[in-house]
Amino acid sequence: MIPASIPSGGLLALLIVLLAACSVPAASASPHPSASDPIGSPAPTTAADATALTSYDPTEPIDLQEAAAPRALADGVTVHDVSWASPTGGRATAWLVVPAGSGPFAAILYQHGTETDRNDFLDEAVAMAYGGAVGLVVDAPFARRGADRRNFLQYYSLPERERDMTAEAITDLRRGIDLLVARPDVDAARIGFVGHSWGASLGVVLAAVDPRPSALVLLSGRPSWTGFLAGTRIASITRTRERIGEEAWHEYIDAMAPFDAMMEIANVDATRLYLQYGTRDDVVPPGVAQQLVDAAAGARIDWYNSGHALDEAATADRVAWLVQRLGLGEIGPEVVAEVGLPDQ
Image (cartoon, rainbow, N blue to C red; front, side):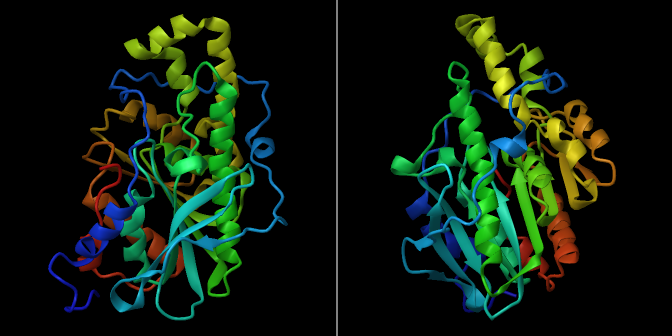
């Protein structure tokens, strides 16, 4: 429970200054697809698979660094601004949220969507810390700051750049797990993951290439980006296809297909997964989402009367599921109520 000594506004008020000081502009992206989004299937590809594309040397030093003194929140929870050496160059950045005490703690990684950054899940990671989970809220490569930023989303004419950026995002998460399990206060058998939208789709690939996360919550994940592109009628995308030509277009499809959730779901023990979707989502409509739902036999699936960001009921459900799956302590409803929706 948050102590009464916290100023009015509770957890949210405590985070405002921290977020404002460290926020970055949203990554540029094309307008969201509408309900006309086709279901599609991953395009056949001759490219290297996700396992090969996201391989790295785990014996290399993590080189964990902290940018500033940690911020103290209620009940001894601390927020650290950290970075580590990305296997493909530059430095991955994240919030590290640490509960009070010596553990052993569970640990949860968080990955945001395309139009935000690590601030998107910070409040949720703080809430989970009250139940005894270390949180690592990771910036995607396109959401980093300065020279470490890899702003290669929807880079249709140079697909190898987006392919490499996407692979880097996954290896950053895998190195993040390395960082967490190296901590003496973390129980390596209790690793979770939460991803929204683009981050949820990557969560399927992460689950396929890395067995260590035992509980993955995927919010509003697109089953197949290449399947969407193959049939979309969105004018801005069809104009781009005409501009770069069919050969370049199919090179992009071939490069990105290994990172489609549908390409890797067969390689995942779906009992590790919890899928959450909104029945009023106009980014990943229910008919599209159903493709991944049908393929994830054994996963928990919940639908909400909501849009792409889901709603407070979805937040409460995933908190309760992670508490149960990762063996956390009880997290009070007053704490969960202060968790905002993702991608807002």
